[in-house]
Length: 204
Ligand code: CDP
Ligand code: CDP
Image: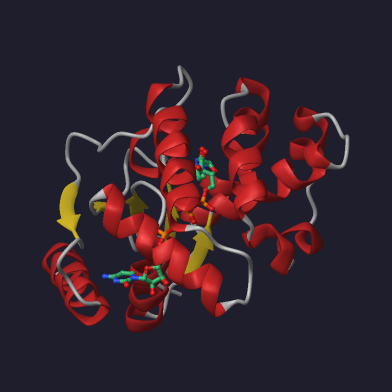
């Protein structure tokens, strides 16, 4: 059983966090947690009329296994419930326990390197211009056959970034010791290669 080893990956919407996290987890044979899914699941239950903090305290695995969490409406709801201190507190222990599991773990989100795992062995802050990120999200919606308008998606991404950066609780920002990866002009393979290089250097 290998020791815990935590890789924290933060950044704004559609920067490439999930893509890089999945690739790193596969490369180093570690578990991966997309923490955005936790907030999306709480947001989805809020949209159905539930109290957000109650939803956060009673989340179950099947709440996370749902294609309907990938809509823009649920993304906005996620960022609305994410400002609530009780919601964040209810999700903390699960994320910290996941991060310290034997064999190592990759967590991606907004506050992994700053709040959830300030002692993470590796911290990456993945970013890209708002225009590039909005186009990526737009392309995903088109691919999934969902209704999409580039101007609306751009406005949505910018509104969510602003809410995530300006909130009092665990705002989106790079940890002081995070390595920045700007994927604006990188292919997925290039972004993954630079992330693997950083992890390899720290893992020894
Ligand atoms: O997890 P996050 O929201 O940060 O982004 P993602 O889901 O990993 O990536 C958003 C979209 O951008 C996906 O469709 C990726 O395939 C694409 N992408 C890209 O085109 N180039 C990159 N360097 C990284 C991601
Ligand atoms: O995939 P994308 O980057 O668009 O979003 P996500 O990672 O699924 O996160 C959805 C929303 O959840 C974000 O806009 C944040 O408001 C919130 N979130 C957060 O506050 N803290 C995290 N660790 C992860 C997500």
